[in-house]
Image 1 (cartoon, rainbow, N blue to C red):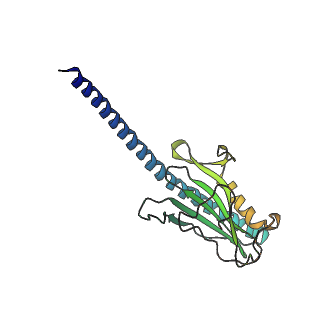
Image 2: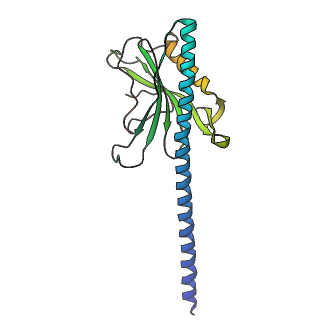
Length: 218
């Protein structure tokens, strides 16, 4: 057999082996991505469920000790899809827990996107830069924590620094306390809204992002 044929066979064998390996890696990455998404969905439900239970308990304690009523609404779940192609896989899934006191409210929500660890944030109103805040409320997202995968797939909450590094662990009770603090200590936070305003709403499409740092949604 001529050497040129042998060389061709060697090249084709190497190319086919490379193709098979690339295909294997792609399938493995896809499986890992799907596994992470399944875990993330379950983790978000677990965290929001625990937050609801703790919030209801703390609200009852607050009512008994301070006579102040905080309404804890049932969790809500929504899916964001990219408006350019809504048939594609979800670009984000949101789980939210709404706390209300008098005319104020705050949303504690999880943000789950394919291929990434889920995060948890707070959504609230401010009145900065608006001449009529009661008609045009400005919304701001405040970072909470990242939900990481612990031993035996147990969700772990980690505070994320400005560089995106998860370093300090926290508990669901800490997250709920922060939500109550933001809701009830409005006088301690300059620029927060003190007048009735329309109901807060989670974004309905993927072109309205959920930020990792405080930024207005409009």
